[in-house]
Amino acid sequence: MSSDLRELYQTVILDHYKKPRNFGVLEGANCEAEGRNPLCGDHVKVYARVDGDTVEAVGFEGSGCAISTASASLMTQIAKGKSKAEIAAIFKRFHDLVTIGAGADPGDLAALGKLEVLAGVREFPARVKCATLVWHALLAALERRGEPVSTE
Image 1 (cartoon, one colour):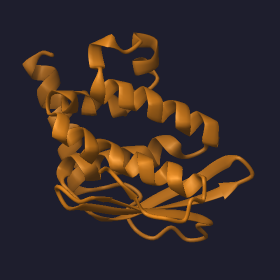
Image 2: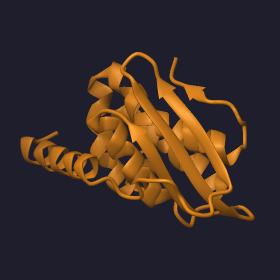
Image 3: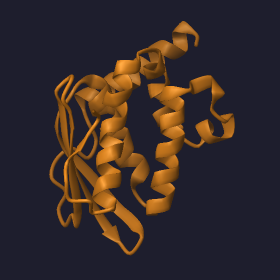
Image 4: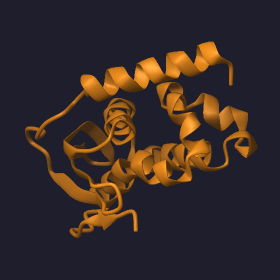
């Protein structure tokens, strides 16, 4: 990755960390789940408003590192208007991006949009849990599992 691209990615991550989108309790949420990363202390609660199979809106609250918060902010934007199956597919693509990176299908990666800014996380395996925690919580909320999720 070029230094210019890395700098752009860092700028986007810091922007979403400092000014997270969709932060706060979501009015009218009918799904929610909590997630924790006990090693670094990230803690998030995800709220979703679902109509049929479509996620109308997603919000989150909690505290976490820049990677965790940026991932949550970006996730809330990309999940809006998607079906549960589409969100599960996006999470798989995203997980591939932050774990196997270059081995992932380029077509799948292109579908991630701004989530691609978190690609550098794969260079720091301990941070993968920071980037994926909120996604695990969203999936748990959509499945109405009812128990907190953990990255451990």
